[in-house]
Image 1: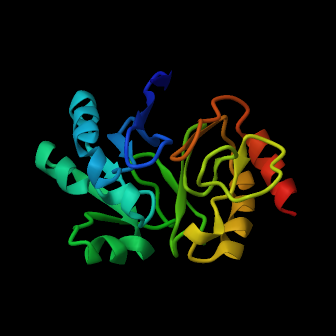
Image 2: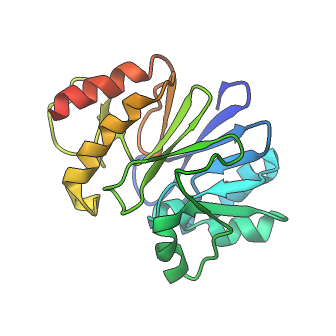
Length: 209
Protein backbone atom coordinates (compact mmCIF):
# COMPACT_ATOMS: atom_id res chain seq x y z
CA UNK A 1 0.00 0.00 0.00
CA UNK A 2 1.38 3.43 -0.95
CA UNK A 3 0.94 5.86 1.95
CA UNK A 4 2.34 8.79 -0.04
CA UNK A 5 4.88 9.03 -2.87
CA UNK A 6 7.93 7.02 -1.89
CA UNK A 7 6.38 5.60 1.29
CA UNK A 8 4.87 2.11 1.30
CA UNK A 9 3.41 -0.10 4.01
CA UNK A 10 2.83 -3.86 3.82
CA UNK A 11 1.01 -6.35 6.02
CA UNK A 12 2.73 -9.72 6.31
CA UNK A 13 0.85 -12.87 7.22
CA UNK A 14 2.60 -14.75 10.02
CA UNK A 15 1.91 -16.93 13.06
CA UNK A 16 -0.53 -14.47 14.67
CA UNK A 17 -4.00 -13.39 13.55
CA UNK A 18 -2.93 -9.76 13.23
CA UNK A 19 -0.61 -9.04 10.27
CA UNK A 20 2.94 -7.85 10.88
CA UNK A 21 3.68 -4.42 9.41
CA UNK A 22 6.83 -3.58 7.45
CA UNK A 23 7.51 -0.38 5.55
CA UNK A 24 9.57 0.86 2.61
CA UNK A 25 10.86 4.43 2.32
CA UNK A 26 12.55 5.80 -0.77
CA UNK A 27 14.88 8.47 0.58
CA UNK A 28 17.24 10.53 -1.53
CA UNK A 29 20.09 8.27 -0.45
CA UNK A 30 18.66 4.74 -0.37
CA UNK A 31 15.57 2.56 -0.54
CA UNK A 32 15.07 1.39 3.03
CA UNK A 33 13.02 -1.49 4.40
CA UNK A 34 11.91 -1.10 8.03
CA UNK A 35 11.40 -4.46 9.67
CA UNK A 36 12.89 -7.76 8.60
CA UNK A 37 9.99 -9.85 9.80
CA UNK A 38 9.97 -13.35 11.23
CA UNK A 39 11.25 -16.50 9.59
CA UNK A 40 7.77 -17.43 8.37
CA UNK A 41 7.46 -14.16 6.45
CA UNK A 42 10.64 -14.72 4.41
CA UNK A 43 8.92 -15.30 1.07
CA UNK A 44 6.74 -12.21 1.45
CA UNK A 45 9.72 -10.09 2.51
CA UNK A 46 11.92 -11.13 -0.37
CA UNK A 47 9.13 -10.36 -2.84
CA UNK A 48 8.83 -6.84 -1.38
CA UNK A 49 12.58 -6.34 -1.31
CA UNK A 50 12.97 -7.44 -4.91
CA UNK A 51 10.08 -5.29 -6.14
CA UNK A 52 11.52 -2.16 -4.53
CA UNK A 53 15.23 -2.83 -5.03
CA UNK A 54 15.96 -2.52 -1.32
CA UNK A 55 19.39 -1.16 -0.38
CA UNK A 56 19.06 -1.23 3.41
CA UNK A 57 17.07 -3.29 5.90
CA UNK A 58 16.65 -1.61 9.28
CA UNK A 59 15.86 -3.97 12.13
CA UNK A 60 14.02 -1.51 14.37
CA UNK A 61 15.04 -3.40 17.53
CA UNK A 62 16.30 -6.79 18.64
CA UNK A 63 13.16 -8.94 18.58
CA UNK A 64 12.83 -12.03 16.41
CA UNK A 65 9.74 -10.72 14.60
CA UNK A 66 11.91 -7.86 13.36
CA UNK A 67 15.05 -9.77 12.32
CA UNK A 68 13.92 -13.32 11.50
CA UNK A 69 13.82 -12.67 7.76
CA UNK A 70 17.36 -11.27 7.52
CA UNK A 71 18.96 -14.47 6.12
CA UNK A 72 16.36 -14.69 3.34
CA UNK A 73 16.77 -11.01 2.51
CA UNK A 74 20.54 -11.36 2.25
CA UNK A 75 20.18 -14.39 0.02
CA UNK A 76 17.75 -12.59 -2.30
CA UNK A 77 19.34 -9.12 -2.38
CA UNK A 78 22.77 -8.11 -3.65
CA UNK A 79 24.85 -5.80 -1.44
CA UNK A 80 22.15 -5.42 1.22
CA UNK A 81 23.12 -3.39 4.29
CA UNK A 82 21.53 -4.59 7.53
CA UNK A 83 21.22 -1.98 10.27
CA UNK A 84 20.04 -2.22 13.89
CA UNK A 85 20.32 -0.19 17.10
CA UNK A 86 23.86 -0.56 18.42
CA UNK A 87 22.68 -1.71 21.83
CA UNK A 88 20.48 -4.44 20.35
CA UNK A 89 23.10 -5.83 17.96
CA UNK A 90 24.00 -8.48 20.54
CA UNK A 91 20.56 -10.08 20.07
CA UNK A 92 21.10 -10.44 16.33
CA UNK A 93 24.64 -11.72 16.77
CA UNK A 94 23.37 -14.33 19.23
CA UNK A 95 21.06 -15.51 16.44
CA UNK A 96 24.04 -15.79 14.08
CA UNK A 97 23.25 -12.62 12.11
CA UNK A 98 25.74 -9.96 11.05
CA UNK A 99 24.90 -6.27 11.34
CA UNK A 100 26.62 -3.94 8.89
CA UNK A 101 25.52 -0.66 10.47
CA UNK A 102 25.07 -0.35 14.25
CA UNK A 103 22.82 2.68 14.66
CA UNK A 104 23.23 5.41 17.26
CA UNK A 105 21.34 8.63 17.88
CA UNK A 106 24.50 10.63 17.20
CA UNK A 107 24.14 10.23 13.43
CA UNK A 108 21.67 10.47 10.56
CA UNK A 109 21.60 7.44 8.24
CA UNK A 110 20.31 7.59 4.65
CA UNK A 111 18.45 10.76 5.66
CA UNK A 112 16.81 8.93 8.60
CA UNK A 113 17.09 10.08 12.23
CA UNK A 114 17.10 7.34 14.90
CA UNK A 115 15.21 8.26 18.08
CA UNK A 116 16.15 6.56 21.34
CA UNK A 117 13.07 4.99 22.95
CA UNK A 118 14.44 2.26 25.24
CA UNK A 119 12.37 -0.09 27.32
CA UNK A 120 10.75 -2.51 24.93
CA UNK A 121 14.29 -3.70 24.25
CA UNK A 122 17.43 -2.17 25.80
CA UNK A 123 18.14 0.04 22.77
CA UNK A 124 14.71 0.21 21.14
CA UNK A 125 14.40 3.03 18.61
CA UNK A 126 11.84 4.85 16.51
CA UNK A 127 12.88 6.52 13.23
CA UNK A 128 12.05 9.83 11.61
CA UNK A 129 12.20 10.65 7.92
CA UNK A 130 10.71 13.98 6.91
CA UNK A 131 7.10 13.81 8.26
CA UNK A 132 7.11 10.02 8.67
CA UNK A 133 7.64 8.37 12.06
CA UNK A 134 8.42 4.65 11.90
CA UNK A 135 7.50 3.60 15.41
CA UNK A 136 8.63 -0.01 15.47
CA UNK A 137 7.17 -1.28 18.75
CA UNK A 138 7.56 2.03 20.59
CA UNK A 139 3.78 2.33 20.20
CA UNK A 140 1.22 -0.08 18.78
CA UNK A 141 -2.41 0.15 17.75
CA UNK A 142 -4.78 0.35 20.73
CA UNK A 143 -6.78 -2.60 19.36
CA UNK A 144 -3.74 -4.77 18.66
CA UNK A 145 -3.53 -8.07 20.55
CA UNK A 146 -0.04 -6.91 21.55
CA UNK A 147 -1.33 -3.72 23.24
CA UNK A 148 -1.23 -3.36 27.00
CA UNK A 149 -4.57 -3.62 28.74
CA UNK A 150 -6.10 -0.21 29.36
CA UNK A 151 -8.83 2.23 28.52
CA UNK A 152 -6.98 3.96 25.67
CA UNK A 153 -8.50 7.25 24.54
CA UNK A 154 -7.01 7.23 21.06
CA UNK A 155 -5.77 4.85 18.37
CA UNK A 156 -2.39 4.17 20.02
CA UNK A 157 -1.19 2.21 23.05
CA UNK A 158 2.03 0.87 24.49
CA UNK A 159 2.90 -2.76 24.04
CA UNK A 160 1.92 -5.20 26.80
CA UNK A 161 4.32 -5.46 29.78
CA UNK A 162 5.21 -9.11 29.15
CA UNK A 163 6.91 -8.10 25.91
CA UNK A 164 9.07 -5.36 27.45
CA UNK A 165 12.54 -5.53 28.92
CA UNK A 166 11.58 -2.58 31.18
CA UNK A 167 7.90 -1.66 31.15
CA UNK A 168 8.25 1.60 33.08
CA UNK A 169 10.96 2.77 30.72
CA UNK A 170 8.82 1.76 27.74
CA UNK A 171 6.02 4.01 28.94
CA UNK A 172 8.34 6.91 29.74
CA UNK A 173 9.96 6.72 26.30
CA UNK A 174 6.74 7.64 24.49
CA UNK A 175 7.08 11.27 25.59
CA UNK A 176 10.34 11.57 23.64
CA UNK A 177 8.39 11.31 20.39
CA UNK A 178 6.71 14.69 20.95
CA UNK A 179 10.08 16.40 20.53
CA UNK A 180 9.80 15.70 16.80
CA UNK A 181 7.38 16.81 14.10
CA UNK A 182 5.58 14.13 12.09
CA UNK A 183 2.30 13.61 10.30
CA UNK A 184 2.25 9.84 9.80
CA UNK A 185 2.98 7.04 12.28
CA UNK A 186 3.86 3.66 10.76
CA UNK A 187 3.33 0.69 13.08
CA UNK A 188 4.51 -2.89 13.21
CA UNK A 189 1.42 -4.04 15.11
CA UNK A 190 -1.92 -2.61 14.06
CA UNK A 191 -3.21 0.10 11.75
CA UNK A 192 -0.98 3.00 10.78
CA UNK A 193 -1.95 6.58 11.62
CA UNK A 194 -1.73 8.35 8.28
CA UNK A 195 -2.80 11.89 9.25
CA UNK A 196 -2.22 14.21 12.22
CA UNK A 197 -0.04 11.55 13.86
CA UNK A 198 1.26 13.89 16.56
CA UNK A 199 -2.19 14.16 18.15
CA UNK A 200 -2.65 10.44 18.94
CA UNK A 201 0.84 10.34 20.47
CA UNK A 202 -0.06 13.26 22.75
CA UNK A 203 -3.33 11.52 23.65
CA UNK A 204 -1.41 8.38 24.56
CA UNK A 205 0.96 10.34 26.77
CA UNK A 206 -2.03 11.83 28.59
CA UNK A 207 -3.42 8.32 29.09
CA UNK A 208 -0.10 7.20 30.57
CA UNK A 209 0.13 10.06 33.06
